[in-house]
Length: 447
Image (cartoon, rainbow, N blue to C red; front, side, top):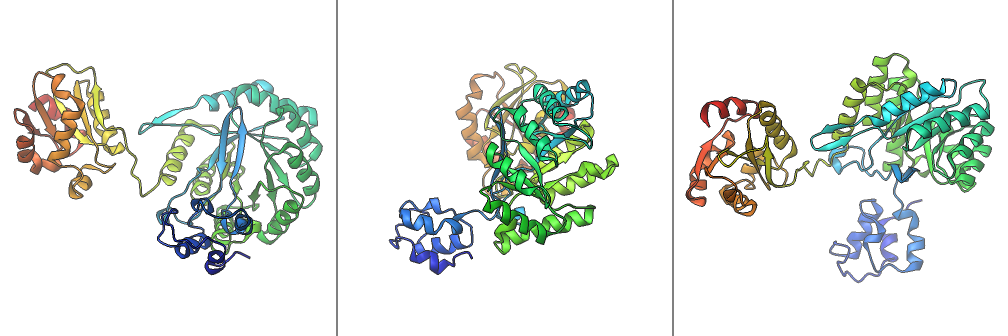
């Protein structure tokens, strides 16, 4: 049973030193009981108390990591059901599956293509996380090991090994030479042998059962054998079943602190068969609440929206995506080209930069530190004003790079033009369009 706030308080130093960032030890204990803070935040807890408080300080969903060649895919350590409550921390890992009854050349081609896939999105590089190698019915340990070796030769990314036969799984693990793939899976028939393999290879183990009660019973047995890094497969049959089981698993772990289900989950949208249903099932899995998602197909037109969706879901809603403030050159501007001003909200920056770049017209883009807010939001909050813009002009030294001191404000903040004229004497202040899409036409006609 988890400790209450008062029980935790009795084990703390009770000095109210505030080193944890909270006003009292009682406040810290209440936060720890609610799993809203980590025990490590208190630097004065005794070793004896740390041992007693280990369960209270353990995250409700265990962190599980797949490792290979210096790369790592983490899942777990989540503390909320809804991202607006705080944030989600570890992105759902996206894996592409290959099967060991496929020709080695085809396995290698599929893995290599997916491994090379990379897309630039608002300043971030998005790519897949790894691959799953599945042993098909009637296969042999040698066939599975060969498929694992082929996949590994085409990509250094982490792997999930899928086989129900412990002998076949052992051959696949041997082919990876000390890595930490996810072993999938332990069930009611093979859990002891699979647990032994996971313990021997120090690898996380996926556990599968048809009901949450059976799943909790299996995880308790496997944990008793000394395997702590587990991943849950609630054996979902369709979209509705997946939504219910993954949500209940998350809710029981977070709201009831039910340790037997306090692990990341895995989903197989590729089992849907129909490619369109696979995309829908994968999107649902990312949002509700899979830690690892295994796709059957690699198709850029499906993968790209899933990667963008994942990035949006796992972006901290309390921290806007920002770019570095400063002076950016677009299309090799010269000394007589205009200076465009906007905030460091990433979507604003890329909207402006992409429109200007695609137009082929050169410009200097001055990005003002507005704490990641968009133009109107920053202006309303007092984070995008004449003083900040003037400060950015001086700090970047843009005046030394141009001969025509002409600066273009976003149309939404035309009201600032008079104040900026006072803050930047000698500069010509122009008011641009409200929308980035109208910038090319404005630059052609008015600059």
